[in-house]
Image (cartoon, rainbow, N blue to C red; front, side, top):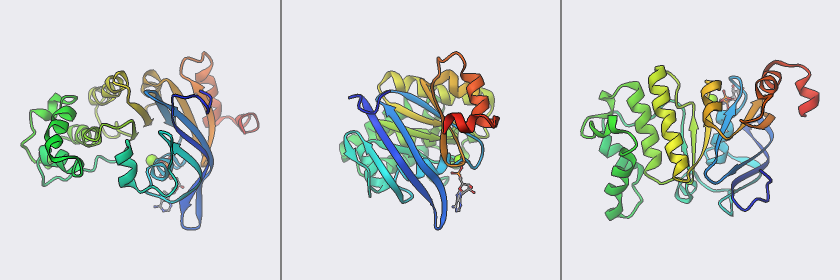
Length: 247
Ligand SMILES: Nc1ncnc2c1ncn2[C@@H]1O[C@H](COP(=O)(O)OP(=O)(O)O)[C@@H](O)[C@H]1O
Ligand SMILES: [Mg+2]
């Protein structure tokens, strides 16, 4: 998708970020269209989580980033979420001592009072498994259900872009499909998704487009319908000849 397309939701160019003096992202370019599902693949340590943290304002960065027509420079995670850019962090962080409902109400703490409980119901509608347990402590849920709750927390905000960092980590295959199927229904409602996923085949089956990252750089960008994608991905991950070709 060309950067100038009117339906572009997120545009990142030349983004760098890191931890103290350690540079991790070395000039990342990426675009995400409205309602598009984009998979972000790459080996451990490639910088995927760092990219999500920079985009959502959890880490300082340099370069350019625009979201929904406005500059993202200096925007805090809270303000990014208010604008509709929601990051579900790695490792399903929920408040285990609070009920499912209270976790969701907390996620929507700054929404108008009258709207909060309807947003909670709206988010729970995607996950009947946890809707049935809304009065239970989050700590009493299974790992998969806690992951659903973490995603539901993001949905309370009605995101325009939902960034999911390895939502399937530690889940059984059935639950992986369950969590990923929600991405499909969200897309139908117009929500864009940036999905970081280790399960490559599942991510490609779901996504419209894919980026692969290695050592803090994008080494591949492709439509998931591209015929030689498996070959190109293999090169991006393992092939020495991928480096000169891709950059
Ligand atoms: N808090 C941190 N402090 C210092 N280095 C970090 C920190 N978090 C991640 N890194 C380093 O940044 C690099 C990219 O990590 P990360 O973005 O988590 O990769 P990925 O999500 O692709 O596995 C790795 O070399 C990792 O060791
Ligand atoms: Mg990561």
